[in-house]
Length: 154
Image 1 (tube, rainbow, N blue to C red):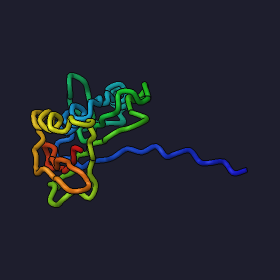
Image 2: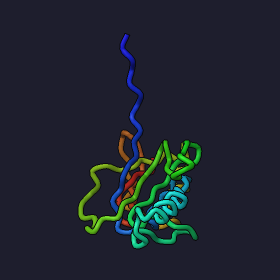
Image 3: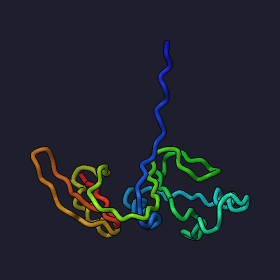
């Protein structure tokens, strides 16, 4: 009998001009938590394995300058590094600006009858509404996050 391999752990990595504001937006949008990697960062700084220039202060604690993640609050995480072990979005700084439509996007599902309220909540967080779609297959709102990445609310 062959053993079924365990499912792969994954995270969705999103390029960003400013990773920290993006993490704040998506943590609020999804009701996730911004990961706290400060203990790991402090150990790396003390060991000389990470230059101070690679860090910033974020929400009163040290954070990596060029990347930060958000995680589902109910999923496990590594208490030593603060890294989530479940559903995560990782925002990484890139020098180039977004120039074309996303090839991958998130679909948010707030529940029946809640789309309009969710669209307004997301707009208050900094999202923009691009258009409302009404097709025989369904209805949804196409939105962008503060850096212009498209996502849909169903």
